[in-house]
Amino acid sequence: MILPSWFQEKGSLVYHPVPELAKKKIRLRFLDRTLQAMAQLLEAFLFSEAHAQKAGLLQKLDPRVKLLTLISFVVTVSLLHSVSFILGLYGVSLGLALLSRIPAPFFIKRVWLVLPLFAGVIALPATTNIFTPGDTAATLFSLGRSYHFGPYSIPAEITLTWPGIGSAMLLVSRVGTSMSFILLLTLTTPWADLFKALRCLRIPVVYVQTLGMTLRYLLLLGQIIQDMHIAKKSRTIRMQKAKKEQQWIAGQVATLYKHSMQLSHEVHRAMIARGYQGEVRILTAFRFGPRDGIWALFCAGLMGFFIWMGR
Image 1 (tube, one colour):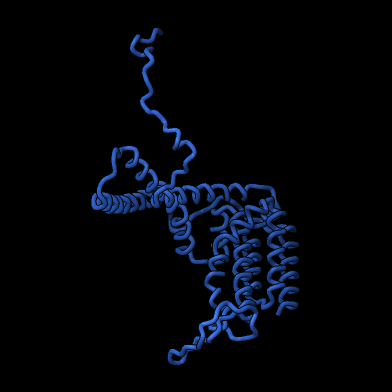
Image 2: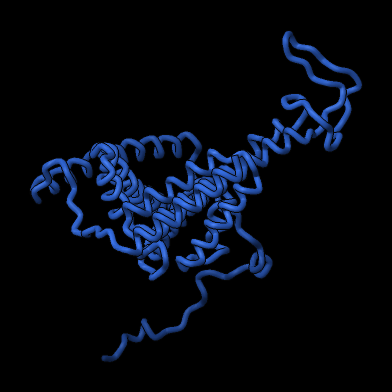
């Protein structure tokens, strides 16, 4: 096939890159960063499902036994009053993650970079003598004199106290260790099996199905929002005024609500057409084996030891 002559002609570049901008970092807008974070959340969700398919220790257990034992570990953490024993249980969770073929850096970052850090910020005021009196660990600053506001007072010197630091460490360690066991449960168990295990433990069907639908279609709606935003950006030549942009966003909110309502009706009709009668049936058959019994006895003994020694 011979190409036409006009197609073979070499013209000048349409876009001339500026050398000064070659190494300059481009800061994304707030909406772009939010949508990018949503895409990363979707990627992390799919990557977490990949961990459940690995041939690790927890992946081979019956989901019902795994659910009961890991939740029991969370209850055990809440009963302990010693930071050292709580951190000992965190070491157990980290060891279980390694035996389940979950990379340690991935597991540690997923735990300590989210809720425990937030809990530490919340507990930070409790470390001062304003809220927790006691022996002084360090002096932060001096106000010159004390202030009184009705039944409340602010001392002349704001200090960190040892009881306050101990309380904050107890809260942060409890939150971090509890999150570790919950993360182990979600990383090593497919969501369908986890929902079925919840139903086997007599959790009401409305709660289990609502959680399942929310988890599945929240990610889908997030992808729809991202596609809508990218479609607008690809068709935008220049920025509009703020009022016009706000009107567009308001219109897309209404469109998204319409999409979600239409999607919910379509999904419900599809479920009815396939024989749905109020209970989602999962083909996976759970079997309690010797490995599950040994695991349950080991967990019971370990939890009993920690509760007895760390009370």
